[in-house]
Length: 487
Ligand SMILES: [Zn+2]
Image 1 (cartoon, protein in one colour):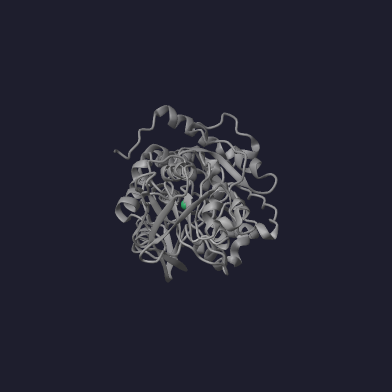
Image 2: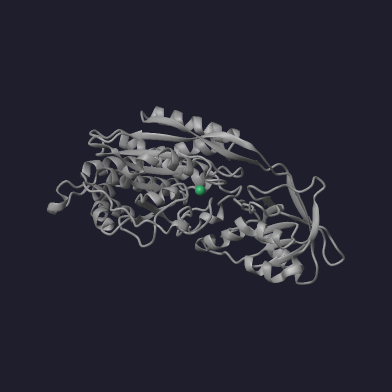
């Protein structure tokens, strides 16, 4: 597929049309020439898509501590250098979990024949004994239901079935995946299955992070395909059902990794930092094209295009490609710690981690007056349908450790309605990313980054959060979850 996209003359003129009578407050407003250069280049040069092909088809999956992750760090550094953007690596210790071989089946009975299960261990799960574990299944819909069942859970494999059908359900259903094993183990269960958190399925299981309570028992945990959760549900209606699980996964000692940090220094206020983030790691299945290869290439392209501007934007634009978002958030935490002394100078943070889809608009998490500051500068995005301020929060898992420092968050929201068709599955591959939509989102990110770096004032900082809330993502979703409405 050609990665160069035609840009109609009409669109270009829309993007670059200067207001007839600029309002006095906007006298120092965005220059149409800069808008043309940034947005035009992102829409027509196909650079982000070409980079995404290198990262996905070239390097492939990049789970923390894996060879793929190491290769991705080296690739990112090399790529920034090729773009003439200053880059360095900041060390992060990351967990190292490996999947091994895995399988599951429903042994046949006189009532039904044997069925293979399409399953995938959850990241962080312990393995089963080598010979596997066989037990009866008990189906629940919620964490609360486990406690209500009492003794009935003992010695069973708990199946967390749920009714996620749209992206917005993700935050709720994710708690079953992350917490289900510990809740079930405490009640005496010997294994845990969760229906894949998916909005479409061709019998593909979707993995994701889980965590055990520090002092509780640890039981093997896996996601089954939506179809297999439905099968188990039907078989259970007719009487007891056993499953056999063989999971070869294990946790190895922590590994050395890096946040990749790159910077376009500001011309006037170099100490004021606009942070653009995405995470370089992915799950070990598929090639992390939407999650979060798309975010990575968008922020890299923004830096490349901003780096070519003469003069440079007023403030420093810093790109951080975070390590270990999926199963630990160690990169986000390491950044907040290493840069604690300069977080007061972080004037905005923007994280792209909801897929490479069509941009819809801009969301803010800032104090009163933030929208008024930014909105007039979003005009050049109107032709893309992304020129307005949207309701709802902005954020991202990797930048969530910046919440206590009251760093304003800005989000370029994309249409993530189909994100969970492929999220954390073998199907998250380059062919699912539409080159044109990726280019449009990249254009929006490049432009919003420029606005934040150039607008005369800075965003008012948001209120400090209540102390207990700080480490969560804005959706209240656990680590490894993308943004709320992007779920
Ligand atoms: Zn992600």
